[in-house]
Length: 412
Image (cartoon, rainbow, N blue to C red; front, top):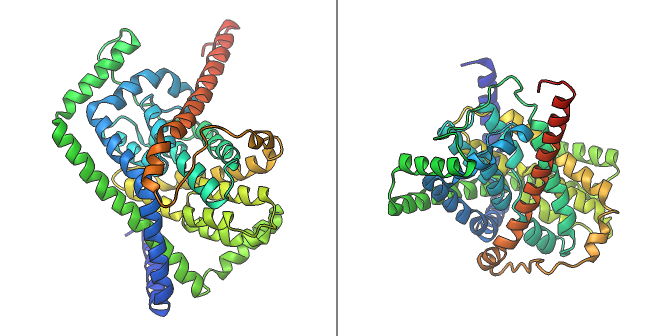
C-alpha cells in the first residue's frame, strides 16, 4: 500500500473510532441528531430528489439525453469545454439540486460520453441547490422572508456559472470527447437519430425500464439519507465532546477577518457538515445581526454543500476515475464567490426585494411532497431558463469575438 493511501486510511480509522467513542459517551445527543437527520431526509430530500432520480433514469433509457446532447453540443463546447450532452446535466442539476448532477455525470462517464476532465468540469459546474429548496426551505422556511430568494438565487446560480467558466481551463491538455452522430445533416435530424440509436442500444422494455429506474432510485435515495444522518450525528457528538473547539476558533478568526459577526460561527460549523442544518442555523441567528451577513453565510453554506453532500458525490462517482480534489476546490471557491456576491450586490438588489412576484412559493413544511410537486415546474423552469439565457449570451459573445478575430487575420 502506498504511504499516502496508508496515511489516509489510518486517519479515517482514527476519526471513525473517535465518533464511536463519542456516541458511547453521548448516546442521547446522538439519538436526537439521528432523528433530526431522518426528519431532514424525509421532509426535504426524499420528495425533492426521488422524482428526479427516476426521471433521469427513464430519460437516459429513452435516449432523450442524447437528443439534447446533439442539439447543445455547438454551444456547450466553446463556452464550458464540455460535450453538448452536458447541457442536459446542467438543466437537471440546477432543477433537482445536489447530487443529481454527479449521478448523471457518472452515468455519462460509464457510457463513455465524457472523459475524466470533462466529467470533473461538469460535476463542479452542476453541483448546486435546487430552486425549490433555496426558495421554499431556506428563504421562507429558515429566513422567513420570501424576498430574499432573489438575492440567494443570484448569488448561488451566478456563482455556479462563474465556476463553469473557470473550470473550462481545467485539464487544458486533455482531448475533448467526440460527439457521436449518425449523419452529417440538419442538427435536428441528427438529434433525433442520436436519440433513436441510444434507445435501440438500451433495448429495455418500458416496464423493465420503469421498474429498474425506481429500484435504482430507491437504493440511491437511501444512500443519501444515510449520509445525512451520519454527518448529523457525527457533528453533534463531536461538538458535545468539545472536539470541534479548535475549528470553532479558526472560524471565529476568519469571521473576524472578514468583518462578519462571530455569532454566525455556529451556522458555519453546521454548514461545513450538513447544508440543511447550517442554512437553518443561519436563518435562526439572532435578529439583531445584520440581515446581509446572515444571508451571505447562508449563500456560503448553500454553495459549499456540506461534507454530507461531498460524501454523496464521492459515493456516486466511486465507479469512475473522476477525482475529488477538483470538486473540493471548486466548492470552496463557489462558496466564497456566493458570499461575496451577496455582500457586494446587497444594496443594488434591494429594489428586487420590494417587487413581490406572483409565483413566489408558499412552502408548507407539513406537506412537503405537495409543496414540491406544486412548485416544481415554475421554480425550476425559471432557473433553467435564466441559466441557458446566460449561456446563450456567452456563446453569442464567443461567436462574435471569434468572427472578429478571423476577420482581422487570425486562424482560430
